[in-house]
Image 1 (cartoon, rainbow, N blue to C red):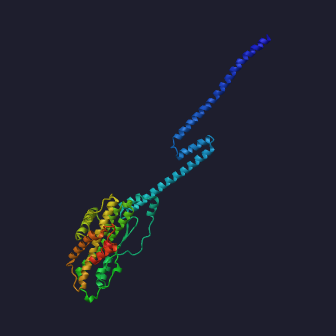
Image 2: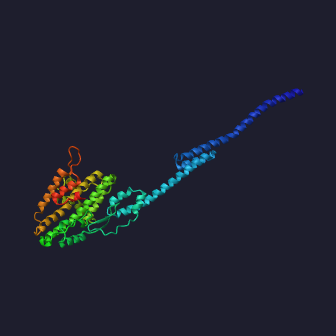
Image 3: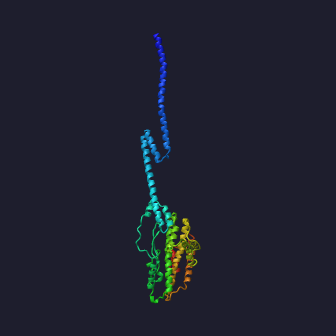
Length: 412
C-alpha cells in the first residue's frame, strides 16, 4: 500500500511538473511581449521622425546622431553630429550673406536711381556680387585735377558723369590763340579729351605778310571748333566703349543707355522733357550725316548711324557695329574744323583776307580722298601673301599728302 501510494504520487507529480514547466515558460514569454512591442513602436517613431527631414540635411544628420547614441554607436554618432554642426554653420552663414547682399543691393539700387544713367546702372547693379556691391557703394576719391574745357569726369565703373567743364572756357582759350596771330590757326587743335593740344601749335609767319581774318570768318572758325571738340570727345568715347565691348562682349547691358545719357548731357538736354529728348535723338544722327559731304564714310556706315542707337536689348555685335559707324562719322565731323582752318590759313598766308568761299570744294575733295582711300588703300592686300599691302604709317602718309593732315579716325 505504501509503495502504491508513493508510485501514484510520483506519477501524478511528473505530469504536473511538466505542465507547470510549460506554464512557467509561457508566463516568461508573455512577460517579454510588451518589451518587443515597445521596441517596434520606438523604431516606428524613429522612422517617422527621420521622414520629416531631407536625407543629408543638417536636421536629418542631427536626428540620425541621436539615434546612433541610443543604439550605443558612439563613434558613428560623433562623426554624424560633427557633419550636422558643420552643415548648420554653413547654412547660417549663407542666410546671413543673403540678408547682407539684400541690404547692399537695396542701397546700391538707390544710388543707381540717382545716377545719370539709372537704367544702365540698375542693370549692372543687379548682376553684382556682395563684394562688388560694397565697392560700388564705397565713396570714391574724386579727381581734383582741373578738367579740360569741354571735358568730362566720369565714374569708370558706372559711366556716371561726375563733373563736366563747359566749352566756353575752351572758346576763350582758342579765341586768344587765334587773335594773337602768333600761331598758325590750322595748328590750334584739341586732343581726344577736348583739350587744346599745345604740342601741335606752330608759329605763324610774320603778321605783316599775312592776310586778315574778318569777324564773320573768325566766328565760323570758333563755331566749327566747338562742334569739332564735341565730335572728338564723342569719337573717343565710342572707340573706348567699342574696345571694352570687344574685350568683354558679355558686358553689353546698359551700354546703349549710357550712350543715350552722354549724348543728351552733351546737348544740355539731360533734364529736358522726355518728348524733347526723343525728338532730339531721332534727328541727331541724320542731322550730323546731312552736314557732311557724301563719301566721308561708306554707305553701310551711314545707313547704320542714321538709324540711331541700337535697341536696349541689342546684341554685343550689333552695338559694336554701331559704335564703329559712329566713330567714323564723328571723326569726319571733327575733321571739318581742321579742314576749314586749313582753308582759311591758305588765304591768310597768301596775304589775302580770309573768306568762306571755296570751302565747299575742299569738303568735296576731302570726301573724294576718303572714298579713294577706303577703296584702294585701307584694306588692300598682297595677292600673293594675303598680307596688308600698306603699313599704318604708309596709310597716314597717303592721307597727309592728299589732305594736308591725318584725319581724326586714323590719327588716334
